[in-house]
Length: 422
View: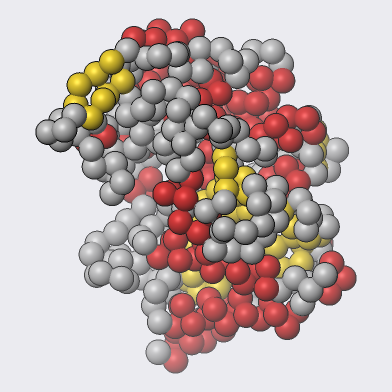
């Protein structure tokens, strides 16, 4: 236990030390950007407690305000089984935080006149044009009906396509039961083969009627690959990662990078059942836009700062300000059923933009924030949110693929906003 305490203490001292060039953004003392050093210690205490109780192996947290990095720390272990301390340069399996980066890469094509949001998905994959829509029946089964309008590219961005994830607790209908569990990462084949396989299933809703979190982005990634004529990873590297100097963000880990990926406990601390992040050691067969990227928290805070800046960072213009505004505005109109809080219960009062949840009012949600705040998180324990009004960007990583990941999402937002003093 004493050895454990020493390692936790060492890891929690990893903060804004070293030359400025080693940091992902210019640094600033917390008080100079309206953040309380004393209140930031609540984050230190929180993760020290969680690690001491063996609820999570470790974490990395980055907070930027007014374009300056005010807090960047590592806690605990990257690999508890080996006793490897966490460092700020460890990598995380980003899971659904991949979607935000894929959205930016796809919108880069829209800016070029290559991917209109109102274009039909069937223009790229014809099988989606005849995809039936499931209609539940009183006996717990279902019948089907034709699409009342086509699936549009816009629907993929905002999860209104009628595609779903199989195996989710809230997707227990006979229709959803036909869908693959585990997401696209479990599919063995190419992105086009995956898209055509999905097109043989019944939609769970009519296109454009319900926010249904699912495989929309994985299909969008397949569309991007068709248009760009290259893998999604190659396209994102050219349009997002290299311009932003996100040197550790990738779909394909090198051996050296794989050694730096944070790993979860072998067993879920809540129920003792085995758990793993499969993609670390068994790479998916294609670059799935919904969940398959890896990256460091330092890389992600640069990506988030680019969005907060209106699409640019360090003289690299990744998207235009108009497209960032479009991306981070609510796209769930009055005729669309908003089920965002079904996916993230603390995000009641949020809509959804193009790849991000968007807060539409200051109340309702269980966490503080302002209208216009945008966010999304990853199923393996990573999180991201940005608040334009506060000029705030936050990214954090844990290796927590179980239910605890949802607890950390809410707690991190409380802890960060609790440290703002002006």
